[in-house]
Amino acid sequence: MVREQRLDPEVEVVWEDFHAEVNVTSEQLRSWLLTRGSGQEAFGPGPDLDLPEPGRQILAVLRKRKVDLTPDDIEVMQEAIRRIRSLMDEKPKGGNSNDEWRHSLLDLGHDVLVER
Image (cartoon, rainbow, N blue to C red):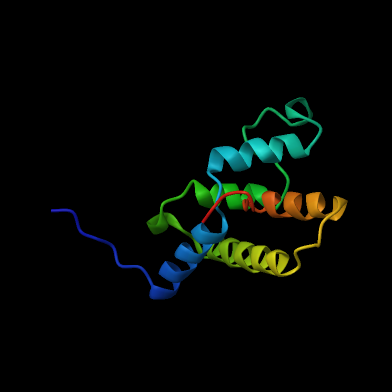
C-alpha cells in the first residue's frame, strides 16, 4: 500500500496559486527563455544553466512534484505569484508598452493569450 504524504495546507495553496498564475508548460517557458536571449547559440552547453532569472528558477519548480518542493522552491513560487499579479494589475492601455508588458509576464511563465 502506498502511503500518501501530507503537505502543509499553505504549500497546497501556494502550489495551486502558482499553477494558476504560471499558465505555460515547462517546455513553453524554456523555449521562450531561449528566444529571449540572442538565440540558442548564445547559451552554454547545459540544458538550462544559462537561462535568464527568474525564469530558470520557475522552470525548475515547474519540473518538480509537489512532494519534492524545498523551502527555496516555495519562495520562488510566492515571488512568481506576487510578480505576475502585480504585472496583471499594471496592464498598459496599448501601444508598444503592451508588448514589453506581455514579454515581462512570459519571462515569469504567464501568457496573457492563454485562456484560463
